[in-house]
Amino acid sequence: MTQCQVGDLDLATISALRGSWPLAQDTFAELGSMDTVAAHVEALRRTHPERTGALGDGRVARTFGHPPADTLPAATLMALTVTILDDPSGHHTLAQFLSALPSTSTAHIRLRQHAPHCSPAMTEAIRGSVRLPRKAAGQPAFFPQLPTHRGRLDPRTIPAVLPEHWAAPLEDLDAPRRQLRRDAAIRLVQMATGRSRRSAALYLGIPLGSLQSSTVTIRAWQKEPGNAVAYQNALHRVAEIAIAEGDPRGTPAR
Image (spheres, rainbow, N blue to C red):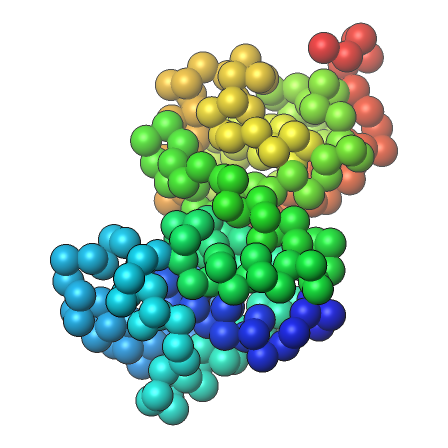
């Protein structure tokens, strides 16, 4: 990620953090209090109360596109930015913030301008987040699932019910077991294809009622501090197992 133009990428990331707030507060809850940023964002939104849900246009977009003048929220936002951009998997974190914003937002515009200068992973995060649906079965996904394993993971080998050895990386997660495995299967298809949650569930033969149940349950669990990051890391380990082993059913690919 350091291949990007650092100053512009910092500003774009800060814009994404503020525009999607309080998503960052939930994601980085283990880092401590972020009350100064919360107050700063709330003050910006009170300036244009009729447009708080439309952060990608007009004065609101421009307001969120400039760094805060107050040193306390500015320092906190910069610390979060460094945390994201210094993390080898930080493009996944940035993508979840971008997916909460309109494609016309300042963050999207700035990042698209600099995508050609970024690493392939960051470029995919920037471009992929524009295409991601913001809702699934009536509930927003807590973090988007980018097609990070397209070309490596064959979606035809993914069963709706993950076998025990595939699901081993999920065992350490304190989440409802059945819903987590169903959600993981859906996300594996998304990682392999870039499909929406609904499309991935239907591809696996999962009824939409079951998709709704899993989405609500797992989304609530992911809101707990550290769970979203731990889940994302576990999913990548599951994907690597799936790639190494192929179809666990020993049947012809669909």
